[in-house]
Image (cartoon, rainbow, N blue to C red; front, side):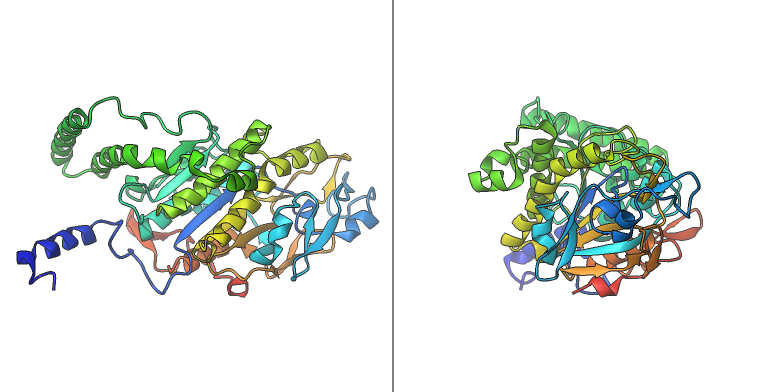
Length: 444
């Protein structure tokens, strides 16, 4: 019909749109996606699993006794009580009274396992599927595989508090994928991005962009074609389009008083209301078609917000107080707007914390067994998958690693993780390397 009407001009316009990633088919669609968008709530530093979602009565029973897994250390009971919530009866710590209200919407994996007890490698592995820097991040793979639903916004956004995570900014990078798939970083406080408000008139800015485009295209041609230069051209153009749309997308003043109260946007504590702002922005970015959004934690310890080697009680309570309300609000808000079914929420850090300690108020890095949770986007709520041993030392049932987690996220987004590849340096690379299995038991 479009070819035969209006002398085919409508068909020509549609053909042009189809060539753009934002409108065209994904690179590697394998089946119908349950999750159109992903929100990754990054809990950096290592949340203690035995104090949050994995209660261990044995720690209370043997508190203060010498650990049989590490000399010079003693079993440390949790300072917080646990209760059962929802129809599922899921056990959740009093640290998270608001997330507890979402018990029937989340699937908890208690049997996660990472490689090393080192922040930099743990964060890099969680984000890129590899212990060493230089690989594309999960968000970049999602952007490469599915693009953005909105040509005026990037496919991958990181909502940041301005600090560089352990592991460096490369954990948000595109690695060997085309540079346009790296993250766009939006700050929590102050101007969300530099130059988000244009200083020139639209006509003058258009002239400058046209000049830059001609210069960069000529430079790229002299190099025989260069991805970095060509990506720069596209990024200049995207940035200009973002200036007209992003301020409106991020404008929290349009939210109702009830929504502001739900998230805690007017909280007196600065980090609490800033984290609420970023979680609300995540929802608004999903509504605007951004494919992958990561929300970082408010800045805390130098090696990660949740990194309490000492002062466990004070530190974890502060972190929970600043994040619990907004995380729960995000899940509830997505659900009441009908967006949770198509939006996958992932809550995870790079490892857990030891059930034993050399002191009485702190825990150390623990990759041998810890907890993450997912919600929405095809996940079966009210599910507890896997288990650690009676003290919470080792994952012993349905052991799951980050390759499995990544494979599951991609599966929910409609991508077979074994077929989402990119050829670089003479071989095909993928996010899950040569392993990874979809955790079907947590899927609806």
